[in-house]
Length: 118
Length: 108
Image 1 (cartoon, chains in turn cyan, orange):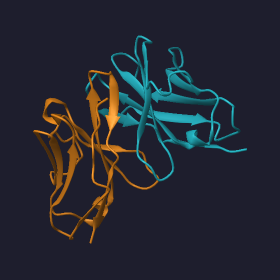
Image 2 (cartoon, rainbow over the protein chains, first blue to last red; image 1 turned 135 degrees about the vertical axis):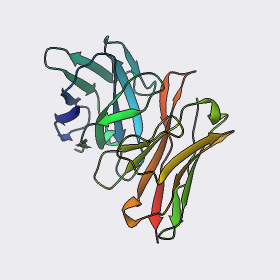
Image 3 (cartoon, rainbow over the protein chains, first blue to last red; image 1 turned 60 degrees about the vertical axis):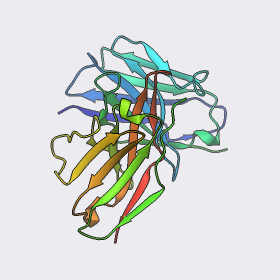
Image 4 (cartoon, one colour; image 1 turned 60 degrees about the horizontal axis):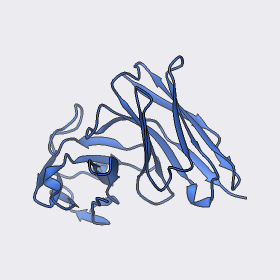
């Protein structure tokens, strides 16, 4: 059973860079698309972007200038970096997996709460 | 860009059928997926590609998709079904994942 486990700094100051990691246990990157989704307090889910098993990325346009996603194939980990954070980036961040374009997210990480505050 | 719309909240009497909708332009042309999210937990897939249930999801959960509306149905609603439910599609024209705003289900 594939499990996603994530971690990262939970408290940031404005202008800092958010950095999260998601480890894939019991599986591999092959054939999958790996997304990051966030959820501001009391609000709905927002897709941030994704990276596929080949390392090709696809970011939400409004975040594209600040987002970087990457894969560490040796550790089977994916990472998210979001630069120049503001209070609006305060959210629970999830990594999630889907098997292809148009397919559902069938595995989710447990979520990492991130707060941006001065 | 493509948008999908969900009602903020739905209430259902215990044991009755809850219906939650996801509206979008010609949404029947897209695969609609539904997720259940309980407080403090990650979302869980309950229906994929309009009407398919993942293993472990009760048969009480079903889905349909026609015209401009996709629907998630929960029959014999239980208190344990109280949660937020999100629909999700893939917008091929912009290559983006799109989530609905979510519906909060209350079982009375």
